[in-house]
Length: 88
Image (tube, rainbow, N blue to C red; front, side, top):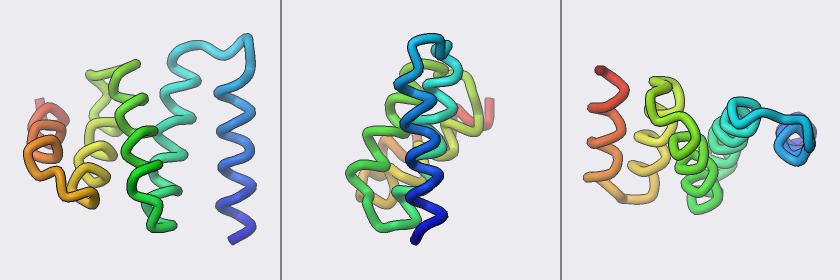
């Protein structure tokens, strides 16, 4: 409900901040992916999780989020690949 909306607003503001670093944007995208997934917004979650991994493809937290989100979207091979990369 309200807490998720507030978190999304904070992440959105962070991502839109002209002084934000790529890492800030990746962190915001991963946070939004997690919230969207809990809200059943799998397609939006997938876009955000992919963005986080595109920015920082070595971050195991981002890779685990992508694995969960890809799985929720029925993308088994992408989920398995992300999970495997997270364990390295």
